[in-house]
Every structure is written in structure tokens, then in C-alpha cells.
Length: 114
Image (tube, rainbow, N blue to C red; front, side, top):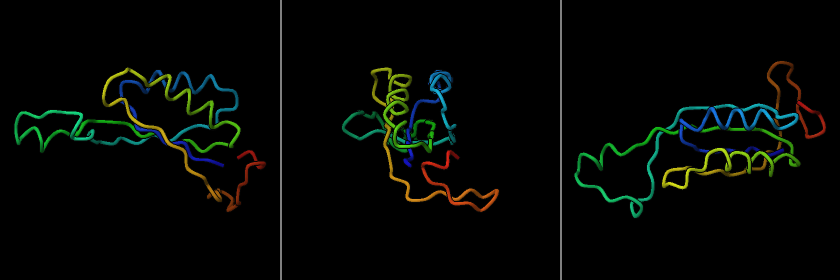
């Protein structure tokens, strides 16, 4: 299992949701609101006030998926969220050792299907 995480622009979420729902057997996602800023070299600020308030609203999406689905999900996120501008976000993949379902206390593996 893998966790695919992405930080994206909030206004791209409807397009992303629509694109992910088209993936057969898409497992679902968790979304949280986030704030962040880009590397200082990417932006020139005019004042101290702007330096202290330059956090930009973002959305973090997390998807737990079988290894075979990772490339399609990652590419769908990138395709749906790319504007070509600074601040489009990032996507990364993390290995998951085990997952435990709270509802019935079971440990899930790739072949369990959720």
C-alpha cells in the first residue's frame, strides 16, 4: 500500500475530484485545508507586512491505494492541478507498512481490498 499526498490550489479541487472519480475502483480521499508559502527565491516581497502574511490557502489531499494504482492517481492529480504557475503544489508517495480499520479492528493488506 501507498499513501499519495498532494498539496494543491483549492480552486482545483472540483476538477481533481471529478478526474479521480473517473478512475475505476478509486479508493477515496481525505482532504484538509492547509496554508503555505513558496521558496523565498521564487517571490520578491515589497514590505515586512507582506513577508509576515504571505501564507497562501492550499488543500492537502491524501489517498491510500494499492501499489498498482499509484501512477494513475499521481498523474491524475498532476494533470488536474497544473496551471503552470508558481504555487501549483506538490505530490509525493509514501510507503505504508500496515493499515488498521478502526471499525472492526482488522489489519488490512493490499489483497484485502479495504
